[in-house]
Length: 633
Image (tube, rainbow, N blue to C red; front, side, top):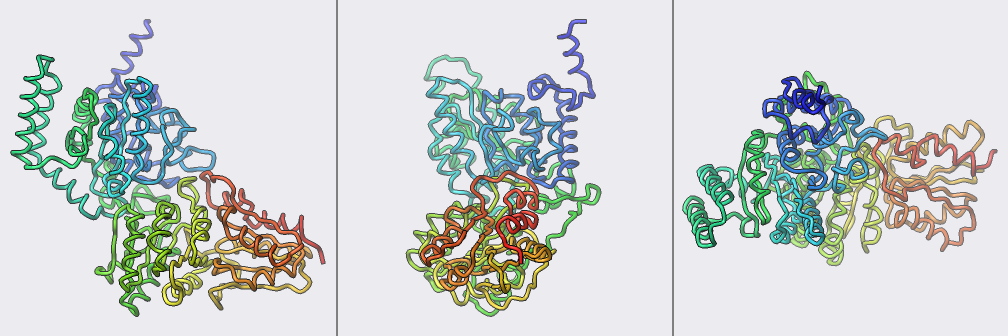
């Protein structure tokens, strides 16, 4: 039998399944009916896997048909698809040869939950933060033009990411790239509901269906008309503009930036998607395609509550109930304590960058909506906005994930610290965060902030310390004050959790020649190791920092009395507290052994306990240090 004909008959079969296809190339040869069945199978795979591994579910469920259309119209990886953030890339991974590995999603040594070029040539650029895709696509498009490459670059960005200023910097510079296509996946939801003028503007465009229908007809004429001379083309162009002005009375923002605007189009109608993408492909101009999708499409619990299923832990597929409740965690304690303090002080304001639920600020919004500000995915604006609030006599508290605070370093210096404005940062997800990997670990906030003159940093290890530190940061500190705390809860703590002060706790053991120093979550492992090794005759003293910066001089005096000092720091060592502590010890004349245990590389995704063990910050790892460098009684 002719193998080619056999393959054609196989692809015509109604029951083609994912594991039987050579992807993405076979995708182009399927019928629309087969593609619809395949879309259901992809959604089923996503729900099944994410229910076991956790991940970003709702946004990925909404982008299945869009992803299929992209791979049917374009030729990846020659045509480059750039996914913004990466919250929409799961079906892309499945359709580019990673179906078998998809069950390892976000697991140690498995595939990442975000685009990762080392996994596949189809992942063009590593991503994890919002609003970067258009700027990335501009770079790829420019490189292609310089090389004479006629392929396209397609940036896929969500409407939530369009609230980030970097997206507009990209658009402002992308209006000259002839091979650039920007796709706005508009589901009217980011992590928290979209806010601000951008959301309203996109809604106004979606509502102009009469304009869209007329424009699509004119676009077809323009694209398909043979070259019969510029006068006719000009007439057609003027006709299009006239119809647009008559129906809308304005051009879109995207057209003003130099893009051809196409849409909105139904993001779950594969035939319509392919038609508009082929139209975009034929233009020799930058094109902006507006696609409407439903977040959570195909899984009812996610459709009903897309915010809840944006980023989820394990959950029960039948009920949609998460396996682990978020009621008991540092974020919730922070949010509720901020509400309590705000009842006593009407100057306190709360700011979030589209992360109301993730940072526990939903409680503040419910009680003080007039003092609550969700600025969208705009961390730079949030800090500068907070600086102006502070200069006006208010006490702004910006709750933000550590990894996202990185985006506002200039604003912390220029718009807060120089003027001495009293802005408080609630730095959530400080330290390692687990399965989200390199782009999301909170490893850089401490080295960032220690370089800012006048900054104060707290690192509570318990809920009680978090409450006390937040009180101190708001009421007693001046200038920039930060309270950083880890992802998760204080469960399984084995050390005494009373909080006598918000500075440090020193546990002195008579005769001990080794001092273990740390802060935050790692203290639990250090304390366990201290107790374990004590049974084997190894005495150690403990120093737990709570206000970690500026470092108090008396701490160097304490440490100088030991032969060996080991500092365990859950973060980057260069510029971190462990480095500064060592410098202070040297200035104090310390002549003993000083060891720093910290991160010095980008940390890959795995479970938090596994990562801490790799970084030598688990109980077992600390014990190894005590046995190697300690002295028996």
